[in-house]
Length: 392
Image (cartoon, rainbow, N blue to C red; front, side):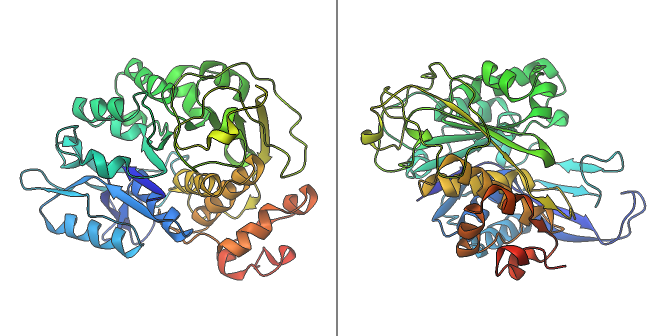
């Protein structure tokens, strides 16, 4: 597989009209789960993907398996639990950023909360180029936390480890416990975190540079700053263009020094390499060169937002897709932005990303043309030329 994603998915109930959960009379059924969202989006971008989890031996489990498989994701490693239910949750239509947003989770004791090193097919999990995990799983149970600790352990060969911090305050009532997310991130190869998450979970303020100082170990650290854009710090083989070819040795803590470079350089000039041993899943040919690390900032295009739910998962999928294809760092960020824009302009967690040919053309625009992009609902079907990216 190009990618495997491990974590809980739930049946989501979305209100049929705006209003408080107390007032909404009916709901439509959908699916939601950070890791399965990434798997589905990567499949839509043309990659082979697998989702690994546990669901109940119930109708909601049937629904999740069928829907995720419909997106082209391999679900054969998902186990059915006869004793625990499939998790469900209800949410309002308002975005998480608004005070009107409500979510009611019914996931305590769910089948996925019982994920452990003893009931997961570890061979199926590791048979990939990239293994995607998130901090949500670490919050579900001590067994889940132990599983993530095992999967992120330093090892020779195996997949690159992608980790989305995905800090959810409701899952960490004892805020100090969220420090485990920092420890897991330090053991990963590619890390995604928002500036707001870093502050809320770890008390790290000061923007991307401060977050990189707190997280120097990952070969690639992507710091998201909402609608303004995202910064990628990259060193070693993952800063080049040979990602995901072959296998190497993962150390989990081979950062080295880095300096922040001018973010205004053109796309395609971001490749740098590192003299250290190659990270998991990397070509050994990229292991020899200098130890310069770069900070590359890429602004997000302007988007007519319908719902922000699922945008972070889509961004991760876009970035990972471009990483698997060996694209330069700036283009990886732009791929992330475009995939996120597809989710932002759709009402549900999952949205069809732009076609690869369209996305490939858009990510190579010069800076002024990229800055002129205006993406509205339906843009992924309407794009034909750069100036037509706004279907309105």
